[in-house]
Image (cartoon, rainbow, N blue to C red; front, top):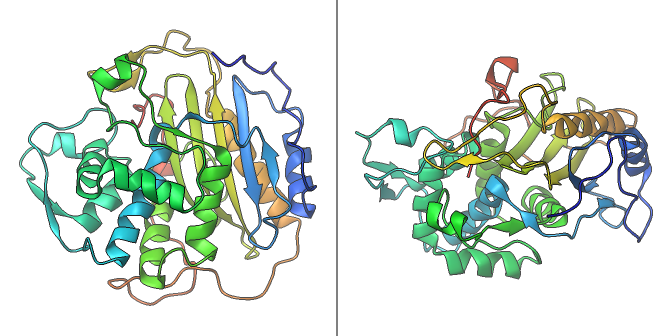
Length: 338
């Protein structure tokens, strides 16, 4: 097991080009941050990819549900290639996956469109929806996509809540740099055509599990993100857009936390230390630090990268989706997401 960091210490920046002003502010804000485990960070602004903040960013760790971001991108790539269609119906198996999501509570629902499955996979981290999407794409194709876009440590090895695979120690993996690179490519590098890019960003913005990066931020700050939680890991990866229009990708993975046992039937961590601080606290602190670093900079002109989707009414670029307020934030007792 990876040795935990001493409380109050953050690893030094990885060797390489020094960060820009945003990165320097973010690094200073993280100095002295207490972390129960090992911290992995990758963060940069869209025009400063050569000056990132990197802390153990290339170390592959258990991905938990952040693996759903590359699954989303791979599915949309298949749509772009004409091999899948967002409107196509897919059968939902009678045996539903445990852990996070709503489909396990809706046994009378037998089919959903690919668009609805992808939306549920992201906004409530639905594991049943994710498994249906994996079956539609194929695990090998997901991994081919990841390799093709330059993700070096991201590998899908099992379906969600596969109890037998978990007992054998089989885990999906990712890195902080991979997650930040993929979000950067989705939002700003034309990885997907505009309607599919908008679909991905809208799903990430509508995220309902918000106890990580956005939990300390004002409601007007847009955070398009995906969380991941399993015993021993807490992750959140996303795009933060400040009220001044500045944006940054921020991927924060925390591994090697003193792991609590997992109830494989209900998909929940079994708390044995109820009075300890939430393992998600560093995610929230870094989200706040990133927003503060963006707020200290001068806003750049130009619209946000958020085109209306095919079924979305036209609105202001980057307009906030209702429903990601404090009442939607996820408490520490919620189940892990994969």
